[in-house]
Length: 79
Image (cartoon, rainbow, N blue to C red; front, side, top):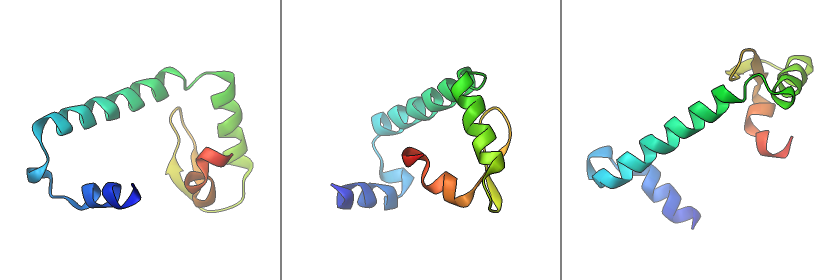
């Protein structure tokens, strides 16, 4: 499955079917809207505070404000 995902990621945008582009656009919009809607939730505030306390170079912008170190941005699903 990972090979299929990597092949898709390397495919020129002109070769993607229009329906795939539409679904990708809707998925991105959904991610942004959900992130923005939840930016003031208690858990989001706690995660931003954790990112602020974490040592490292700030490189990832967090929805709702703040930055996160590279390690946290890369390992997000595990923290």
